[in-house]
Length: 181
Picture (cartoon, rainbow, N blue to C red):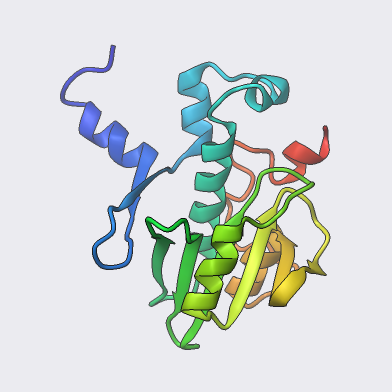
């Protein structure tokens, strides 16, 4: 049992309220996947892949790393409507005045949902990406690029191929985790 006086700090360390567009409920994301996995007793890659928290953990891991790699002044939000339009991460880049839409998928084989396309049509971001657990970068339908986490983080940081933060591998063994299976 977690002592009452420790709970707020633990909740702050594990979650982030991702701002939504006006009138939408903020999305709560898992923040520190390594700590989360330790608290849940997840010890191996196989344990993690079989755990119901794998998807939300990957999403939180990707979002935290992309936020850390983003230039100063970047505004971060997500987008969901009752009609099913959804974007996992919207980045309004500070100095570049560019809007990027990011869909997050944990598997190597992925498809973009209809809701992502609907949201793209409505919001018309400058760039759209699907971040997945692989390393290849390739075009998808309608101006969407599939890209690995490290490469997109490096692009955000402005240093292609460089590791933008020291936390990139924390808790997930980098995006190598899913390439093992």
